[in-house]
Length: 488
Image 1 (cartoon, helix red, strand yellow):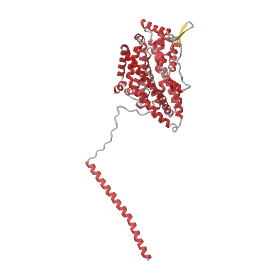
Image 2 (tube, rainbow, N blue to C red):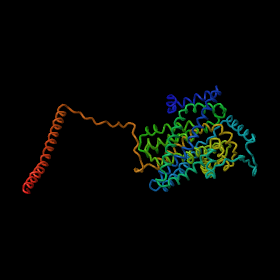
Image 3 (cartoon, rainbow, N blue to C red):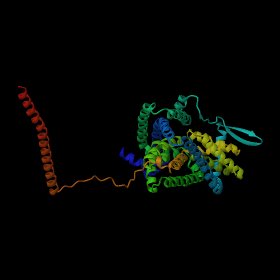
């Protein structure tokens, strides 16, 4: 158990597990299949705990945010900056894609192999082909659907649609925050216990991250042809490099806004970053991110608890970048010359597709690429055939960029508000030293003498007070005797 705990917090160890999984996927697929089953068990446990955690954390975040000054303005600022971050990631992808043109440098062998994959997907019966104005357009038979405002909360809860669940949680949380404090104390204590229990479940499940890294890597290498991965290596390289650059920019923003040393920022964010990179779940890192951003880096707990679960569903920065590069790759693969208007269409379509894909799993996310490709009149089966094969590889970097964009959003909204900041503990701060009293023999003798003198003074004061009270009593007795004699 201790070995798995240390390994799950080490980037080098997780990379070695992924490399070992890749070797197992090529030479021992059966071993990789067993590890992949364990990875699916891990994802089931995390999803089981993460969905109610998402709801409870949203309740607490809304209640605390509504108690801050100008809550409506603050929530509007969060929503506006989230949209700006998604658009910025899409713009960065367009800028690099315009210069590097991923997909245009493919050799003849790779281009022929990818063309064969697209042709097989078009002939497989899963895609409906239609002729329109002499051009060929592909549309999926069943379009993916998203439920923003569901008519039945229990239905979306059973089906695991995080977008609908979060929408219901936001509505319920607003009503919960509007109650008087005396009315929601009981619910508050109950939610607090549920919150800590779910955090503990996810923290214990994340011990299996080395097994997950091994199983996912083995599954990808055993199910995907090496020729396909080599042909798509240009897209993968551009995507990973852009994720690294944008993630570094987000970390720089957190470092500047939080007034923390860069080494400490990286140390505190290491665990949620590793969880996001290795697991294919956007919600698995929620408890670690809340702990790192509030307790470690000192940002407002209410803002953190509101933004982290909400951003894991709505802030689709990684997906926006993914859809931009996907559209550029397919366009270059088909030798489509892109005009400035086409570039604008790709950016707009990628942003729309990113928000439309909120709350969906990896396989469904690829289907939303059809929104961008249909705007350019490019065949959608190209996305389904080519990118389903490598989507598991892109899932980790995509989640990592979304996580860092969420943390940057928190730092921008929370920083600069001293009344809402909590002093973050410094790892190098020395613990407080206890006060020590040292008494010499002279000091002890002096204290003893003072004690004896004080005792004598108290004794003398008692004698004096007693004598003073005895004199009036004696005088009263003498006077009484005299009066008795006179009367006789």
